[in-house]
Amino acid sequence: MPFQELRGDSPSESSAEIRVRVERARSVQQARGYYNSRIPTRTIRKCCALDDAGERTLEMAVRRMGLSARAHDRILKVARTIADLGGSECVSAKHVAEAVQYRSMDRNYWN
Image (cartoon, rainbow, N blue to C red; front, side, top):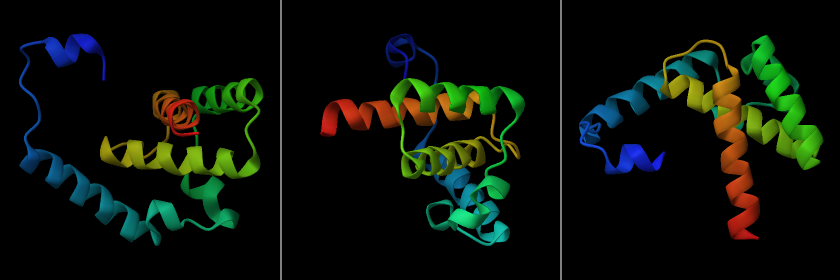
C-alpha cells in the first residue's frame, strides 16, 4: 500500500466490506470450478487468461527475475485472486504487477 494512502485521511474499507468482497470472490472461484490455489496446471492459462498488457508484464517479470514454471503459475494464481477481489473478469497488467510485487517481497524478506 502506498505510504500516502496509509497517512491520508481517506476512509478505509471496513472489515465487513472486505468480508463481502472476499465472499464474492470465493463465489466466483467456486462457480469457475476451482478455488484459485487449487487450479490444475493444465487449466491455469484458461482460468487466468491475461490481457495483452498483462501478458507483457508477466513475460518481463519471468525474464528479469528468472522465474521457474512453478513461480510463473503461482503468480498467475495470485493475479487471478487479485482480479477476483476487484471484480474483474480478465487478469490485467496491474493484477500481474501486484502479484509480482508479492513474489518479490517473498523472495527478499522470507528467504
